[in-house]
Image 1 (cartoon, rainbow, N blue to C red):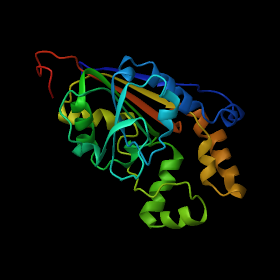
Image 2 (image 1 turned 90 degrees about the vertical axis):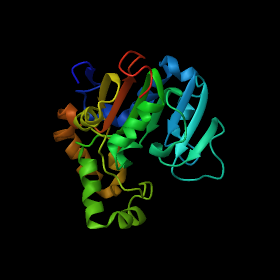
Image 3 (image 1 turned 90 degrees about the horizontal axis):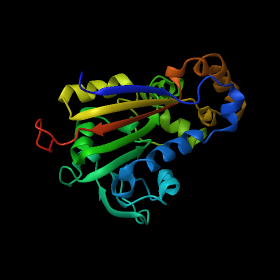
Length: 254
């Protein structure tokens, strides 16, 4: 890991609850802005977890997108019109050659990944040398993820979705790529050809929508007293991984 440049960025931190309450979509805008600034965005792009045709990331960056392919384990009748090719499979099983994409990104996907090393290995493999992967997900250190894991352990997540928060997805969440330590361990385990990693933590208070209205004060209290005073617990976790340029280590392939 000594040859990898690792950086941490705490974005829009140290503000009052009212600021975040008034800017709930900031993290989406920030993610889209960073994606749009990548040179590879106008080339060959892979949307990992491209969803059921309405990926919110695409609508914010479609003006700069080049050729976009998508991969998602769930079939759809009508894929997003900007998706050129769509594979219905897990990322680890995508049938594309190594060194295919200039850029890959995912939006609220990695929290559902079961095998973090195989996911990252395949993602890095399909990137061209110098290519970039961006991920956005919940932060594994935020109280929201703790609550989700407790509900899954107790087997009551489906009741929660049915009676309280129908917007919650019904996929198991593992959060194995949702903090910096876990991402670094996955990369180190397989000695993946990565030259640079950037981690981003962004406060957000939108998790209160997963509480009944009369109980949202609980989320607000936790935010005011704990989370907003501890940037490492910020609700939104993003990371950017840059693949090594071709060189003597691997001759340009993984």
